[in-house]
Image (cartoon, rainbow, N blue to C red):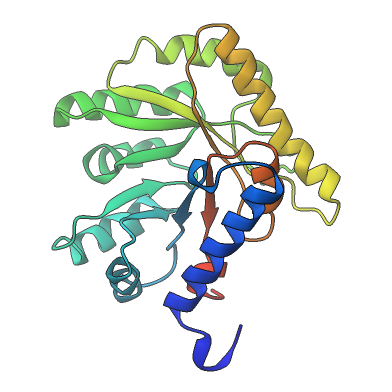
Length: 230
């Protein structure tokens, strides 16, 4: 998309239409899949422009960037979602400012968030990030540790576990990408059989969201296709 039509509003409409089409192709109701606009590296004014289109939830990779933007946009009723790897020493910012953390991947972080949330008098929605890709650069809880981790999270009432998140392998092979998403769905189903209610699956980005939707994603995280190249 280029020229006069290459505006944030046009890109947003295009992404919404493509997500809806992917849902229909997978035999799913488009209402089942939400879009999380990923505003990382884009400035506060770009987020303000997106908010004028009716967007209220924004994904950020870094606690520092979330903190800066939330301060600059404090006049707007926005919700900030941390989707990047969260260092334990940044738990205070997340506990104070985030509406959700999708990258919970270790007990040390869970404990730090829980302590900070108790101090803030808040509860926080979280998704457990599971590592389904073999790439060393990807973060996430090893799949074999999920059940024990979920059991431990049940002892931390300030954390409301809503589902799972993953990053697929970066590959030109759709089968390899789709396998990552399928694994997350199967892990969710196995956890449900053990009594863990995990209705949400956050998986799929600008380049692979149709595959994620076909495998059961309930939310796709879209940055470039909405905001443009970084």
